[in-house]
Image (cartoon, rainbow, N blue to C red; front, side):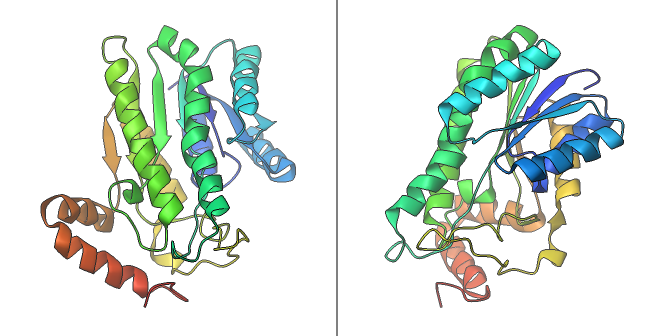
Length: 268
């Protein structure tokens, strides 16, 4: 990845920030986006202080024009785009019967349409370079999670889109990676939306027992270098995918029981 131009959406915190450091320390030139200008500026400063070539662009992944601007900015700064990491994402936590449907729409706009927009405008350069599109999906894209209607739906949609993209570009040298972290210590659960669209504020899970964002980023970096098709992380995540494929009725019960143990779980 030496001197490769890497664009990372949602790169100012969590897994996105860890990916910026991971690719950057291997010599990549980084452009990160984020909605919070202060957070974005701090992360760019940290990257640059660590000797990484990095710039930031305030942008909203759910806005098509912002994604068009992002691709143009990467080309203006670095001349091309080699890798797109569509990482920007948001979660939600509420029963379907209770959730405001605008919450589900917001999650879909960011997690699904945000990837479509980013890919649409970055792909022309990626095709030229036979580069990579990396979609940060989730185990929730293989196994629906109770209380996560919008999140699971968006990740199932994302997995389907990435599969289509991989197949359409099969003969053109473009690498497409579907990266599916399990539960990872990041701020996604703190920013998760509740049934009325307000932020959850606190994580309902023990973050200290989870894979770190930095470890997750190392796995994704290696999978990108090796041009792998799919990456499923954590033992729990691999087990969930396996059981859901081969023993779905058992998976239903196990997933229900695991999610019901969360603090203030919407299911009991």
